[in-house]
Structure formats: C-alpha cells, structure tokens
Amino acid sequence: MAVTRVSQFDSVRTFSGTHAAQIVGITYRQLDYWARTDLVRPSAHDASGSGSRREYVYRDLLELKVIKNLLDAGIKLESVRAVFNYLRRHVTTDVASAHVVISGQSVVLCDGEHLIDAVRNGQGVLNVLPLANVKHELDASIIELKRREQQEYSAARQANEAKSGSTARSLPTRRSIAR
Image (cartoon, one colour):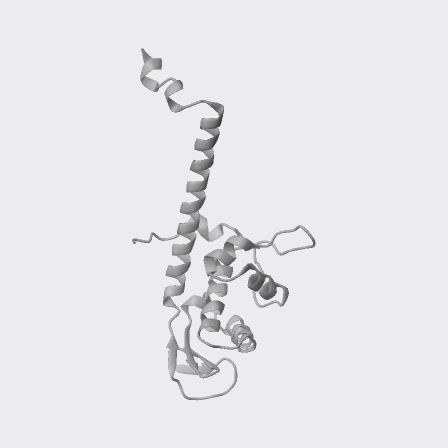
C-alpha cells in the first residue's frame, strides 16, 4: 500500500482524544491517564473541566507514538517519564528523530558521537529501538482516518439523498441547462 505524506495542513490540524488514541494505537483510557499525569499534555487545547475536550497536534501524536513504542519494548512507565523529561530538556527537534537505544530497563540516547543514559548513568547497549518509522506509521494512520471519515461522509450523504428522494438523475445536468 502506497502511503502519501501528511500535508502541511495536517501539521496544524488538531485531533480529538478519541482520534489521537486510534491513530497512535492506545486506549482512550491510557491517553487520559497520560494527560492527567502530565506525561503528554495536548498542545492545542487541554481539558478544562467536565465536558471539555482535549485537542492534540501532530507533534503530540509523535510523542504518544514514541511512548507507546518504548512501552511495547518493555520499558516501565516511570522510566519512560524519565526519558521524556530528558528528551524535552535536551532534544530540540521532534522526538521521533532521536536515536534511542534500549539495554534492559536503561534507555540511552545517541547524541552524535555520545551515548547518554536518559534514565540514569549506565553502560552496555543490547537493543536498538528504531524510531524512524514512527512518522511513517503516524502519517499512515492519519491518512487511514481521513479515508474512513470521507467514506462515512459519503455514506451519510447517499443515505440522506435516498431518504429525501432526490437523486442525481432528478437534478438538471450542465448540458441540459445550456440547451
């Protein structure tokens, strides 16, 4: 399946908590917990009481996907928090461009020629967790969400047309108007 790039418009698009969880591949409950405990707060709009909605931006989704990948690799949530505290202080680009190396419960950041233990001072590198595909996976999930939304919209529109009895055949065509 060919995946197109996410457009510049999507880089400023916001995503509801439900969509963010679907795109990243986590439960809404996880997303809610991570937001309430300040692991990743939504950048566009945070919840401000009952009935308000969190709105996430693309960069938030990247962070959420990296967190999910670290957890899937067996890193404990408290270690993921320490890693993200370090990354936010020291990595100026998006976190998906960082090179992360995992050794047991230790997470090491490759910064040029230096290996920096983002959790604590440690040595020994056994496993590399590639984050280069995070953007690709995230873009593919956003494109899939847009495709499903468009299909739902088309289906709803067709249902409304069928219900009201108006079809494309009953509307004059451009050619019949010109005659």
